[in-house]
Image 1: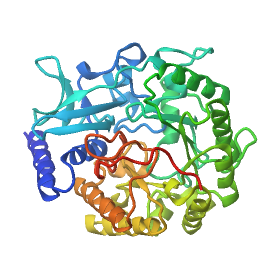
Image 2: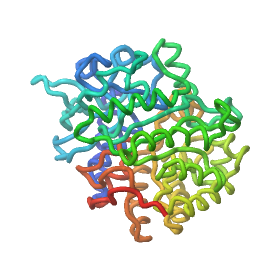
Image 3: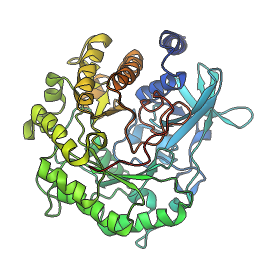
Image 4: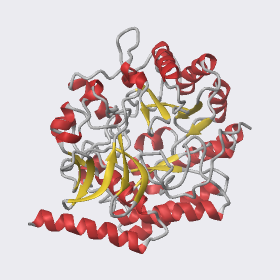
Length: 449
């Protein structure tokens, strides 16, 4: 009875926020709630791993789950889909792509109805039809060494983005250096412990071979961008510093596949000379993520980044990088919601929004448009352990409203390399910022300075 009442309050919360914030699309309200709190899967909705007809969840960098693999039950053995797409239902949802974050305790359940069709259920009521990503042809092929394309070069955002996590661990290691919301190192450990293939450092040749398979079989050209990323490098990997390590992949990709994909790199905020090397190697979009705006919270939540670089220097380097890439092509991410993580975060939604809005205005005043990932409180992280429910849904909805208003204040538009904006069109799956922006056609590709 208590659980049922709590679930009913969830429906009331969601519909109440839809009513209070009519300028935020209802698709975005539901999507944010699913991203912050996860979704449960009936066995009828699990994917069948790489032998099925559905693209399975690849765990491409973080776990993005509310339980560890051993705690996921059937979802650990028979993977859930990478993403789902929601349509219809009582809210008349337009097509909405949502990254899958598994939470067996979630009030949202994906299951087959009496007619066999999959739906999303809340409080026992079907609130949306659910579509699953089809297994792409390129996932059915292996590299010459037997590795799967999904392991080396998975695609997300409904096939738009090839996600190349070429360094699966982070050199910010341990409680005194790891970001307090990040489970990259634990995700590596849990996959190795489960006996799953999870390559630590992906050889350049393997990446090129996987991309060759994608290029050959992606005849519709659904994949339009690639992201090079991985853990921070504070010393060297394979004798290379961070700029050269990640840059070597971009150089090889651009030489083998000139112009095939928009090249993006997620790395630390590096000195301008290192950033120039990224650009020289062929990268066209740079993501030097600032993580959280508030000075005190940055120092507490990102101790390694504060120790090695420092918040003020990090921000200076972001601005400097605009001189290399052009402001439009510098897109730092922040983790939306950690501002409210207790016991050290902001106590009220208003305070958290005011702080984040200050950061948005700072960067947008320089022509730089940040983007954000909705915080998933993974259970092995310090902030996730203390805050299993994440941030309040109202925070996320007010952030969407603030983000769009700030963008309009500075006469800016959605960042390049994320596909089309607008409800019913957006494919960016780990937050709703693109779903909440006007449905206008983006620039076809970033413009280099």
